Amino acid sequence: MQGIRILDFTQVLSGPFATMLLSDAGADVVKVERPPQGDITRQWGPPFLCGKSIYFAAFNRGKKSITADFRNSHDRDVVRQLAARADVVIENLRPGTLERFGLGYLDLKSECSRLVYVSIRGYRENSPRARDPALEVVLEGESGLMAITGNPDQPARQGIAVIDMMTGALAVAKIMEALYARERRGQGDHVVLSLEETAQLLMTHPYLMHTATQSPYPAAGTTHPSIAPYEHFATADTPIIVGAVNDAEFARLSQLLGHPEWARGPWSSNAGRVADRLKLHAALEAIFRTEPGPVWVDRLGQAKLVVGLVRPLADAAEAWRNDDLPKLSSHDNRWGSLVYPASPWKKAGLVTSAPDLGEDGLEVVSRWLEKRDGRKDTGSPAGV
Image (cartoon, rainbow, N blue to C red; front, side, top):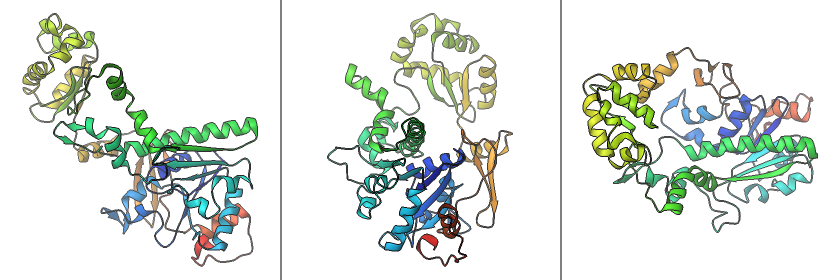
């Protein structure tokens, strides 16, 4: 993505996650924020670090920031000039927002036919709710994802915003597809995605279970509706997760636990184990409770079985920070030293941390528009 310029009008998560990954891939990402607040996640917290939002820091590294008040004709003109020099414009604002200021796809396409314009919506096009705003938690509820998560008596939100992040990842794929097509056709495109469609895609298996067989897909903690064992078990200390996804694996597990007969009786097939999952769970857990979790991880691992500890976040984060796998890092006066997980496009090395609001206005305008008249960045909208 070296040499690809991306003008980023997104905020919160779906769009910022996409543009962060594109920055990792080498794209030049300029985040356009509306003063005086900018991206609303700049205010999300606690926790804060150096007075700044950790949430914002997590998904906005590697980008430049300019400010633009779209009600100001000068700012709109500067933004249009930047868009005319961009390869990609991406936005996830309420439908009609950019169009109202002459910054919609049709407006910008007339000036740059090669532009790839990406719109991330809450709801799919042509739906009765197409112009409604949306949030991750609402789509989790509406799609049924919340109903199949957690325990039966209490719907649960996902621990992280999986619909937003999946939508961002899909946006990256669609952008790369559109840029590839542009090289062949010489024309850009308008790519439209929605959180609603992403949520439905994530629910492919539960929806198919219901529509094809009318089978339930209840919330059931860590268990799986079609596989057993595939869940967490208490041990003498730290819980473990064990999955035996075929009969051969269950036979090895039974042998290791001293009960080879389990693999010859009613539990010899996955269907039999699923039908009798409560009794199976109790039998397995009674044995797992006799030793600490790490002991079972070692024993089952040596038998080529799939097993892991159920770690508290603090333990998991410390284990990640202290392992020898590649990581990304940033060091500056704004945030201090931060370490980030690697991404598919940037496995290790230094990255720039999330920018302060509007700090790159003069540099971006000078570089993208090749203005060299020495004017200073006064902090005014668009940094000019």
